[in-house]
Each structure stands twice: as C-alpha cells, then as structure tokens.
Length: 111
Image (cartoon, rainbow, N blue to C red; front, top):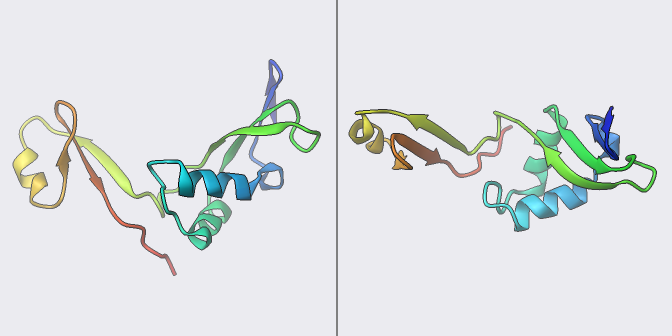
C-alpha cells in the first residue's frame, strides 16, 4: 500500500467496493457504459487494479478512485497515422483529432 498526504493506493481487492465501481462504470462512465456485472467481475479477478482512498481503506476511508487496465475486455483503441485514414476507415476506424483514429467494439463475453 502506498500512502501520501492523507490518501492511500491499494492493489488489494479486499479493499475495493465492487458494487460502487460497477455501478459507476455501468451507469456513469462513457468508456464502459452498460458493462454486464459478470464481465466486470471476471475482469476484476483477472487484472491488477488500483484503488484510491481518502485516508485508510477499511478504516472509514472512502474509495474515491479506481484504475483497472485489462486488455481482455478493452473495448476501444486509438492509433495515429499521417496518410492511411482511408484504408483504416474501411475496417471501422473513425476519425479523431488530427492524425488520430479510434475504433470501439461491443463487449465480447470471454469464455
């Protein structure tokens, strides 16, 4: 656990509030809006996650942040190209700002 200036970061899943995290991802985030609960739980079990807490987790410290990189359930990707927008567009890539392009896929239920 890392502590500084009244905050703590933990990678221990026992400190996380999965109901709070899932509700936020499902209902309020744009990047995981509508994520099914079972997909969220599997991805939480299979990845290294980080919780940010005000004070100490488990001792009244509120969870105020969460980080969760998981390439198995990642829905989107961004790339940069100077001159290949046309070929990428044929495969579903959409224009972004400047030379960037993005693609988003529907959730895939891993078995």
